[in-house]
Amino acid sequence: MRPTTITSNPTIQEIIAQINNEWGPCISLYVHGSSVFLEDVVTPKDIDLLAIVDDGVDDNRLKQDIQCDSSDSQFQHGPYEVTVYTKSVWFAKLAAMDLTMITCAYLPRRFVLQEFKDPKMQQMTWKDPASRLELVQSIWSYAEYTWKKARRVLDRWRDPYKSSKNVYFVFRLLELGCQLLLHDKIVDFQAANPWYFEIQKLYQNYNIQSGDFELVEAALARSYEQEIARFQELALQRNTPTLEERKDNSKGNRGKETCSICLYPCDSYKSEQSDTETVCTLLCGHTFHLHCMTEWIRRETSRKTTCPLCRQGFSTKTNRKSSVVQQELDRQGIQEREFTGYPATIVVQHRNDPNSVQVTVRCEYESRDRADGSDDDSLTRGVNEESEYQFFMDGTKPSFGGKRTLLWKGNQRSSRKQRHGKGEKRSHRQKKRWALKEAMRIEMREVDERM
Image (cartoon, rainbow, N blue to C red; front, side, top):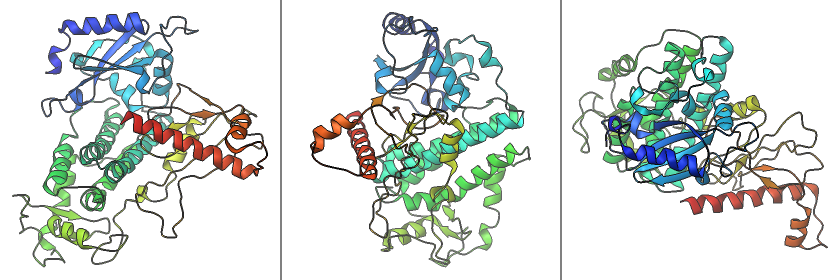
């Protein structure tokens, strides 16, 4: 179904009526997802809709409690999958530079089913340095998270389709961010579609499966870092080449290079999987035929695949130890976010609350164990001495990742006694680690239920 026919579909009025009756006053409704970004390219199974309901000042207008960004705030109506946000959470995410909310302000009219008429939606600009810096931090951290999630989905969930979508999302995020910095608005929602076709061919032609993400990084990590660099240069208001110019420049010197695996020139080889030239340039700068590199990677028996010439790793710089995601959380200062599908929760609470618990849990993104055999699934920082925990929901989110919010506060001693016995003594450090591991166990159970 083409999105241009959605506005005339009587089902939309039924959806708005259902939102009004079951959730609260519907003040806005947008089409989002593949229907927008991949229009005329793919036919989505479900048409994603984003709805905003007016929660007023004291939530009295709501017909039910809305847990935004969770499966509890979604419902299906025919081919439409509707996600519901409250107005307050919407603006909180917009202030946090959430790209989903930002794109709604620039959607073509055919995707706006009910317009959100609020001055804040018209006052967004990224011309001043402070706003540009916030936007860069938000999109950069979101792109880094999504790249890591692509590996996780492939290795842990064994889902090449979702992994390829996440890799494409990375390039789409960076492209939309560049448009915001360059034009102060989004002018082309399908500008990243060439990446979609390239990534789909890579996954299909080379049968990417669990454990093959090194091949994805060999083919795309250099392009990923180039897009990050382009995004940073635009933030500094420098002129950067277009996507076509960057791809032409990257192929300019390939005819002079020789693949060190097969010893044939890089411009005179066609793989069995594809009738076109398939060449990859690694992060170290060495160029190989992608088919040759695929065989090299799958023959490699070491724990870490490296360049055949210089032995440099394939992983991107942001896929190593990086502070970008932590900088995003520190910038927000009040929020926590679950990395959906990851066995961990990142928690950062109010810095000015003397009773708060400031905890950061960092999960290990790599599917393989650490070389020393230890487990690096969690890292505790800054937990107050009077830390006592209880689970509760908070709709305010930073601008990347996840489906559910989990903050800790209150009294956990009673449940701890019930679980371990009243006579068992635990050190303060053991108590903190038990609480973190318990949270990770609950989150993994919720992820399995959603799957």
